[in-house]
Length: 218
Image (tube, rainbow, N blue to C red; front, side, top):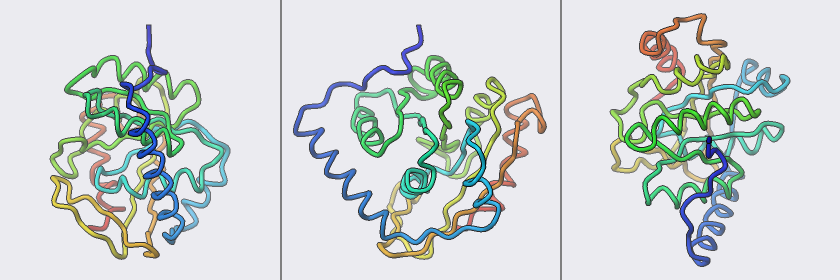
């Protein structure tokens, strides 16, 4: 039986309270950010929702949920969170931000996570995935996201957030934390059904990599 709606490992009340405060602070921080985009992104915002597989790089994770919750209120978003014990914290955190966490990775609970993501997409959620996460290498287009798109027939949307000013963490992906009140350029490539590229996930991923690079400024 699919456990798409399985709760993350229980956190203590004060841990949940801390995450609620952090989520509030992140929302307030996000309200200071100035998102800018072109006509193609606006057309996607205005279109009738069609559950999609949304792909962006791991180091853009800070801006992605803030942009989505702010401008895509008519859409629901599911995202993959590690099934490890440490994943309980981010699972609760993304839920506080208004997203649906699916637990798993290619290292732990992978097959069930794929089934749960497929179930979430078919239930009307967009599925957000970082093909180079959670351990890298940086900007490596792994085939997991394409696999979900091929199995569901969902269209693929490539998304990038290019920062005018940000701190860079000393993590494997040089994670971006945008300065308050900074400008973020939103770039998008609405690919459509992945079957139009290739029925092979690795081959399709290789074709998507240069398209993702084209909208990414680093």
